[in-house]
Length: 405
Length: 100
Length: 121
Image (cartoon, rainbow over all chains, first blue to last red; front, side):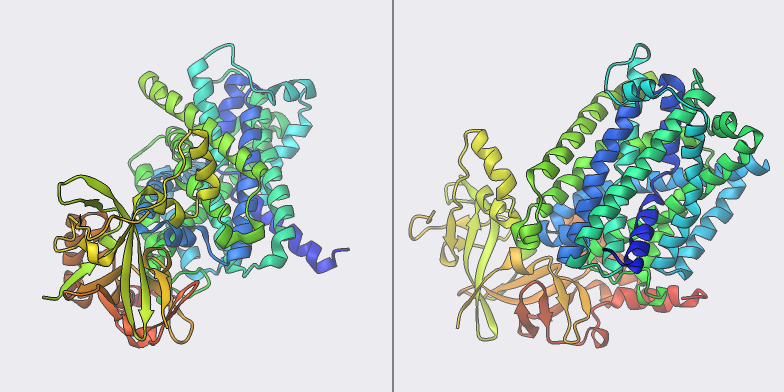
């Protein structure tokens, strides 16, 4: 029987793994999907979530068994020349994602206060930087996650509006749409890219090392990864359901159209609730992506790293997240459309998944590093299958979307 | 005349025989410690050694067999047979046939 | 007594630890000397310039010139003689004190010139 403290740790672990799941990527892509196609893209959300459950469990298992983070191990196992490729790819896409998250937070503030987002982006970015500079890993991880619990409102909204369960079940079965085929499949790719964010499992792995996980955590890891990612997936699905009602038939092109998402469920109170959820979710995700980029670079290059260290002890690590945040603020300052930026960054994430996942899978199957804890055929098959699907779809739909849009 | 050679730049370099034909790529360098020294014994070439190095055999091995190609064993070149006077263009000058 | 060592798999790109167990970077390069006889490993090399050169020669030159400008070891990589390598296992254990060496010159310079001056560091 798990003791009281173990249960608390487990709950906290699940809560923290949910935080950062719902962010501009999942909210925007789920909302667009629900608006244009009702429940028909729920299967993409479910598939992305399934893949993520496996990936996050693997990331935690890897950290607990090898006491290494993934970028660390990638450099050591594959050598610098091969590591450079995922490093550059992930960093480039990561900065785009960071820009979208910062933009999401600034947009929420603009929609709530009327003050231009190009002005909000500066204090938002600065506050993010300050929290990383002064905070410790535990404070950031848990603080962000607890605040992000407000996004449970999407689940509440989805139940309150009583969606037809038959329709939901039908949406879980993948099938071709009856209109706007190119957009449908592009959104499927974007949803997969939003769910299977490499920064999610990289951050999880760095967190497991920062929290000094060891083999005794393997069971807890399975529970946390499974429940946390499943719950996050359900939240993303809830956004689809809510959008299917609130924005039915609307071609969502601008983030201001997201304001009405929670109105059918909660009336006019739904607008501030939506803006608060969006703002917090995006801000938290921005912190995680910025930290994830710093972990990636510092660990891969062999620098000192760690959020628990004071900045003077890991100056280069801090420089990375600082530069990332500054660069990430530029697109919004330049007036970029947040939704378009989100769609692009999510689609590119999906297209570049093999860069990080193929080496990761090789590590997970490595007898020397993982021993008896290495992957079994189920985990390998699920991840490879879903990633292959994502890449094929991305290669087909991205050119079409670029040509059509 | 003593020369500095950077090992990290040798990784993946093509090794040719004196007639210019490609023998393989340097994938591993085996050495041994002798007191406080570390002496290079042999150079392992070719994609097979890369697989060993990545320990990807559980994933790559079955795939290669499926494609009908058995993974080749890596040719091994003893240090005496590798001419590194131009480190960017290593040449195999065998005194004996390369072991497999 | 001879110990066999696969230099690329077991030494290159591996984590180094100093005599106090502190992590002090990864092995970015390995230097051999060929003095007419059997090639001998003379040292490990650490530095962004070394990493840059492994990507492309031009990138390496560019990185070195920037390091020179910032005063990081005159743009030269840091060399650790092979004699300082105690053991090669999961990590490369070194017989030196990372804090006292010029290993992390880049880190130190960044700390002194920039990071250390920002409040809260």
